[in-house]
Image (cartoon, rainbow, N blue to C red; front, side, top):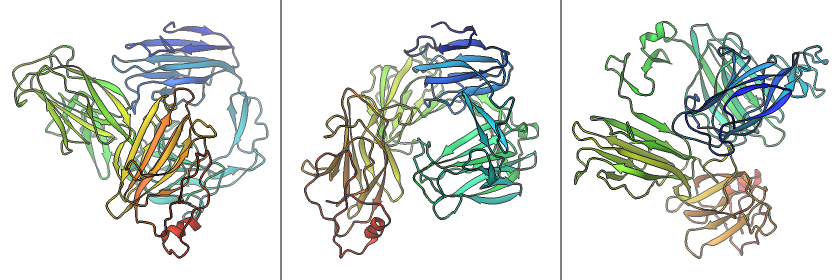
Amino acid sequence: VHCGGNFTADSGVIENPNYPYDYTPNSDCVWMITVPEEYQVAIIFTMFQLEQHEDCIYDFLEFRDGHDEDSPVIARLCGYSLPENIKSTTNKMRVRFVSDASVEKYGFSFSFIKEFDECKTTNHGCHHKCVNTLGSYRCECDIGYELHSDGKSCEDACGGYLKGENGSLTSPNFPNLYPNKKRCVWEIKAHSQYRIFLNFTHFDLEGVLTNCEYDYVKVTSVDAEGAVAKVHGQFCGRIAPQFLLTSETSHLRIKFVTDSSVQKSGFAAVYFTDRDECEVDNGGCEQICKNMIGSYVCECESGYVLSNDGHHCKEGGCKFELNTAFGQLTSPGYPEDYPNDKECVWHFVTTPGHRLQLDFIEFEIEPHQDCAYDRIDVYDGSSVDAPSLGTYCGPRAPEKILSSKNELYLFFHSDSSVQRKGFQAHYTSVCGGTIRAERTVGYVYSHATYGGSNYENRVACEWTLLAEDGMSVEIQFTNFELEEEVHCEYDYVEIYDGDSENAMRLGRYCGNKQPNLFISSGPVLRVRFRADDTVTAKGFVFEYVETDPVEGLIYTEEPGPTTRPPLEPVINEKANNRFLARTAAGRRPYVH
């Protein structure tokens, strides 16, 4: 595939170099698209997978509203989610693809078409705003209003403008269930040199954090022209964002959207404003100034560390946060010799319910019986305080290293004398393992790229969930979509009450009917996932938590495989506990 070029046409297709195979490293391609006058350029994606990074600084696909290098940026994209359609405001668009020297993915494929702005000559009877869409239009309402069922009129709604120095907001009907088909937008505006801090005090929405497509809260910072300056996140599920969210500008937008099905209790949040100490002279920081409540901190870009004065940066930073399901890493300077007096750390995080496997392709570090000079240390967790998985040096590569959870930490140290070539390693995500259930809710995903792609063929995964002695494990599927077959012979999930060879199988499930609640009779519950070598699907997500044992739990013979949820639970009617209350509320545990 040609890298870059000029397109003057009504429509066309653009793909990355080497598509549909992994794109080539060190690419820098520019395409200029021109459609006829009076039309706009519309982009429709069919495939998208680029190296993931929060700010898309490694590999990215950039769209500009015009042909110039400094034309306004429409979007800068990376990651694994298929982007929404993109449109220009004129008949010209500039597209640039950049890849660095390391990680390569499948890449992208998109179509461009000429698009006419249906709202340009008439508003089609829209009460407030006419918004152009691909091949059509839709009516939208100003903040504080919502669209009537006629699709054109606007009426009073949730959301609105919040201008106080502090305040609060909640979803409609909070703390009761929010309504279906809602779209609420709150706009918080502060003085120009102030920033807004947002904290969610309650959060309970349909979905799970990696798949917020049904009900969600989306938080964005907005610049002085009303354009999005930064997307802070799109949130859903039962766990609120675990941080105090700080706006990039003095204007924060909170958007709440619900679909037509599941309802939850919603959210509650508080906000307050504070002067941005980074606004003037970057706070005195040489590189990055990060505003804090009543203060600020200086930070450095990748490859630098903060000096003792807390404001200036010096070379030497060697810390990496790797949040993808797979990738590679090398020692400093590789394939040349690593430098003296160097310390580097790699913190790996993969999808919950998966472990990390580290494979060394090349390994040459100064040898010593106790690895006292140059070495790597690997830890089973998020820091050097986690259990050690080994210390390594010398010319022999370590065997495969496997974490017990979804985090791994690697530390590299070199002293002031001998240098060697160093190492090259690959890391991948491995499903299954033993998971300790706690009182707080945890999640397990069918595959490490859930939400970005279907599960792969020939999958065999098994999760063993452990509670404390005398307690039980509770699991609840929140998303479920496997290949459907009447006997669940191809792709399926099995649930076992215990981890022994003769543990009772509680059921086998496939298709897209979500299984109900399961509670173990003892401290162990086992989940097995199998997929054959043909059809794949979206996969599944389940929540797990340690819970009190359930009285009156009666197990009988397991039913046959099913694509349907379990039937009514069988419960000792004399039992009087929270289990019955949950059943009455509509959450049915699977009991035989």
